[in-house]
Image (spheres, helix red, strand yellow):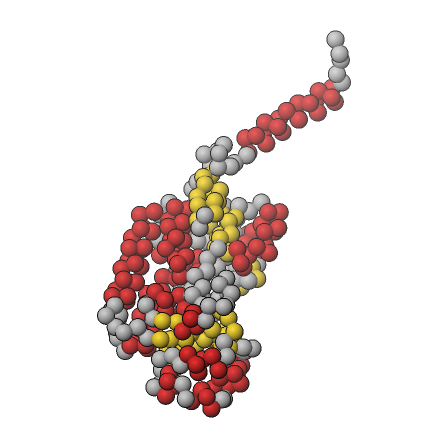
Length: 316
C-alpha cells in the first residue's frame, strides 16, 4: 500500500475543503437561489434575489428608485434641488468621478450605474468584489422600461405599476390637449460653446416634439446619419425650412453659448427674417429638462413645450 506523509495528507484534505467551499460560494442565475435573472432593453442581468443595500451611481436612477419606494444607500452631487431625505444620503462625489473608497465603505450588496458613465469603474468594482450592473438609460422611451426593471429588481413591482400608470396618464393628458391643433413646424437646435446643430428624434427635445405631433423640419433632410442625435445644420438651411417655432436646447456656459449662437445664427441678418424670430417664437430651453432625460418630469417638460408652442396650459 502506498504511504503518504502527514504533510501530504494535510495538503490533500485542504484541497478537498477548498473545493467544497468554492462550490458552495458560487452564485449564478442557474444554480443558486441567492440570485435571479432580469431583462432590461434586451439585456440580461444576474442580480441578488433580495438586495438590501443598493448603491446608485447616478441621481437619475435614484429618483426612479425613490418614486417606487425603493431605498438607496447613496447619491451623487448635483446643483439641482433635491428632496431633503435624499440629500441626507452619503455622497459618492460626481456622477462621472465616483469616490470608490466611499462606495466600498458603504458595503453595498449591489451597485447600479450607467453604462455610458461608469464602465470605466468596472475593474475597480470587480477587484473589490462588489456586485454591480451597468444599464443603458438615455431617451424618454427608456423611462417606463426602467421603472419596470427597478420595480422587479427591488421587489416593488406593484408600486412601479402605479408610478407607470400615473406617468402614462400625464403623458396622455398633454397629448390630448393638442390633438385637435394644427401641428407646428419646428426646428430643434442644440447650442453649445462650440457649435450649433439640429436634433434628430434620438435627442430628448426632438423626441418630445415628435410625441406631441409637431413637425420637425430637420427630418425632411433625409441624407443624415440616422444613428446621430444631432446633425450639422446651417442658417441657410434653417432659412429655407423657415419653421414656425425654434426650440434651442443648450449645453455649457451661457456666455459661450450666446457667442456661438451669434456667430452661427443670430448675428446674421437672415436670422431676423425667419418667421419664428419675427413672431417671437424662439425659445431657449433649460438643460435639466431638455438636454438630459427629465425622467418622471417628462410630462411636465412636454407641457412646457405645448405652452410655448400653442399657448395651451396643461396642469396635473
